Length: 137
Image (tube, rainbow, N blue to C red):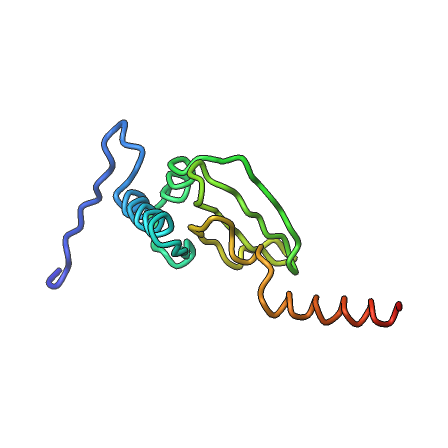
């Protein structure tokens, strides 16, 4: 077997609950939290774009824990917004109508961005309410 690459599979020692990949994500979250605190800069981590080993998803869930808020809204499919055990760290999952996960990410922010009314939405609201009130006068 010339050219074969010898591989050894390593397993985590007993009692280790946070793997290296999960710990790396934890440090990335910490960096985002520090930026949010010092400069008000938000950040996000795309969980679907990360190569996770088996069980790392569950380890990440366990490491972050759960917070007080757990919301589900319908945005052309269910969207679940969970506050983790760390205020400012939100676990957000978007699914389609067939319950397939479309996107999943951690947002580090005071409140998830898409829950905040955007400037163009507020401009539309001002215009629509003004038109309605003028028509009602």
